[in-house]
Structures are given as C-alpha cells and as structure tokens.
Length: 232
Image 1 (cartoon, one colour):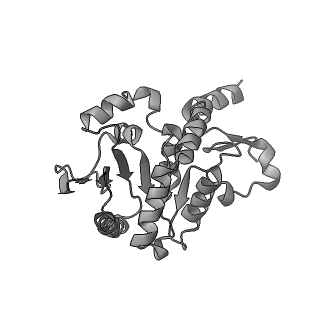
Image 2 (cartoon, one colour):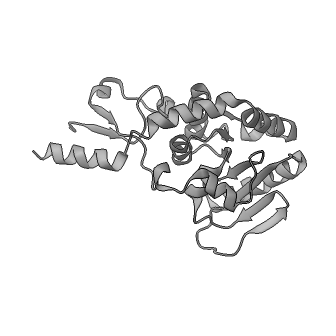
Image 3 (cartoon, helix red, strand yellow):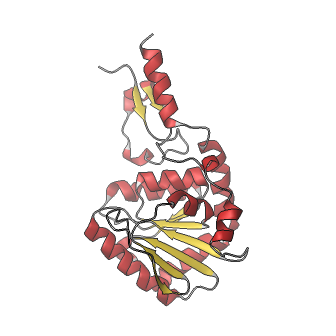
C-alpha cells in the first residue's frame, strides 16, 4: 500500500475535482500539490503589454475559446460557438478561437472584425493572461490554468460528461464562472451568460483573489520534495 497519495489539484475549498474524488479514509495520506501547469503567470509578459500588442483598448474585452477533446468534438464545438458568437453581435468584445490542432501551423483566419480563428496557439499563456474570459468544455487542465491566471470562465460541459459537469459545478461554487449545459445552449442563454460574467465584477474579483492563493502551489516542485523526503 502507498504511504502517500499525490493529488494534482488544489486543497479544499478550491478543489476543482472535488465532486469527482472519493477519498474516504485515504484522505489523511492525500497531498494536494496543485495542478501541473507549463507556464506560471509571473513567467509571462505583463498583461498590459500583451493587450497593447493585440491593439486592445482599456474598454475592449478579450475572450479566449479553448476547446478540448477529440478532433471531431473540437470541430463541432467551434462550429457551434462561432455561430453563437456571430449572432450575439457583442460590442467591443473580441474573440480568439483555437482549433486545438498542433499539426496545423496555417495562419489565423479573421471571420469577422472581432473573431480570429487559429489552428494552434503557440503563445496560449500570453493570450490567457490578456483575456477577460475563457470559454471551454470544462476540462481540469483548462480550469486550473484559468485559476492560476485569474481569468473568469464560462464552461459548456455536456450533461453526459460527468467529470467536466462536476468541474463546472465546482467553478460556479467558487464564484469564478458560470456553466451552460451543452445540450441546452442557444443564442439567448449564451449571450446572457457571457454578458453576466464579463460585466459583473465579482467574477473577476473572485478569480484574482483565488489566483493569489493558487500561485503558491508549484506542483512539480512539490512532487520533487515528496520524492526526496521519502528517500531519506
């Protein structure tokens, strides 16, 4: 039997996967080390500089659409969201959409003045730091990255995808985003939810406060410490 269980998530009350974990008596030997992220916010250029490069003014809002899943799942997701975004006709809101295809390095396509679609985003963490909101299925990694960077979320899990659905509930309970059930999405719900999270400052405030806590966790460093201490 293991002496310790390492969980790549934040401790309660900010555990993303809280509804997906059943630890019972094993909880006492579980160590929450924080999620594993590639790049931390303090390793990325200043937010204001990034936004300046993107020609965004102070009143402009930037939304990053970052899908996950299989290739066909991403394709259907992007097609649906692009339609909803175009119909919503947001003012001073700019969207960067990633197809999530690392095998394709073609240049981005501008669909409308405020919508740019990339096959793959090399500088994802720069865009995340510059964003006012991220839209995603609700995968653990994307949520963790948004929490580290203090970016509010609108999550669109399928009701049949238990993990993502439960993750989205955790995000709502933390007050850092809202969920829309994928099977129930329509133009009215989409537009209303996006406007709520963008315009209600409590989501940004909560996200920033929780980010301060999250950035105390360096998962890789903690794993190394645990391994070294176990060998002593």
